[in-house]
Length: 310
Image (tube, rainbow, N blue to C red; front, side, top):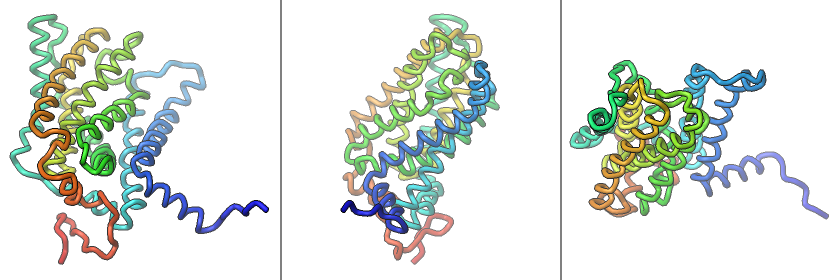
């Protein structure tokens, strides 16, 4: 006789065990499923009527997509690391990290300004950067919510820091692909029309490089807050400074130059720190991060300031 299918408490336990055995795969599957489903639900009314999506639709889709990495990161922290997991993950947002790394927050806007001003001088006045200061606020929800998942949960789980550089590159590739539902509505030359795929490749190249920089900062500071602020700076700079008069082809061009500049920074980091991106062993890189391994429920928990109670 065939065994009867198991029902009751055993079935949820099996799912929890699978999530604990494959936390990285589970994170990406759930993140993409939640984010892309949310984007599809926003676009569905127009798609069903056979109407093209508008720029407003693209702007609404993006904040809905932010629920994917944030909710998935907190959910899996609870399942994989036990009841203290979400609290320990969020406690890393209270870590400011060493002050010497604060200069990194200026890296995205300064590099972007240099790229655009250089192209304005040598190529075309169309590359004149914008100065929409309100655009900086657009980076806040993206940086705060996304990094709960990308850096707070996924990155420490990927290879335990032994291959932090390759993990960051892989995470960056997946992060770039995650933007696909809204890619044609990012930037200023929207929609990108026939250039959308070339724009996606240029955008993804920049995002992968920025992800390595974020991983490097995180490896040295163990501060989720600094990772979030760097993401805020990156996204905010793109919204604030992107040249408003470029064509789709010109936007592809300046994104490629910006990506190249970021990859020079990545090369310097890789040559200086190697594949681990930070000091110490892989064990030290992960052991100091609450929530990167199975949590003992009896262990002392941090208070609201992130300090462990005795």
